[in-house]
Length: 97
Image (tube, rainbow, N blue to C red):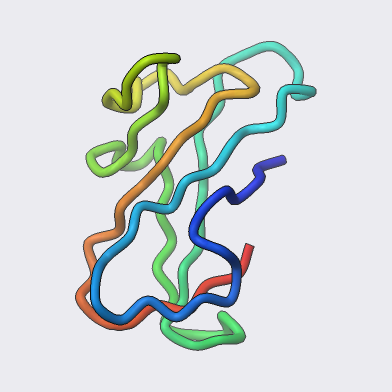
């Protein structure tokens, strides 16, 4: 499971493109994980959505190594890791966790 840390769910972002910060559950089985995140241009996320998947393209993904945000590794990250992504989209975004 993934917990969305910021911004808060059901937020409308109009003047900037935010980082979406998440934390992977620490109770996942051992191994490396990638993150898939869906953002929509409609409040109910029924259409016009952007799906970001760190395994497909880690360009805009980072993880927190305990002291700094660094590039997302191609092999994934451990359970309990904080990750973030900044989508490349200029329109207002609605999203839900």
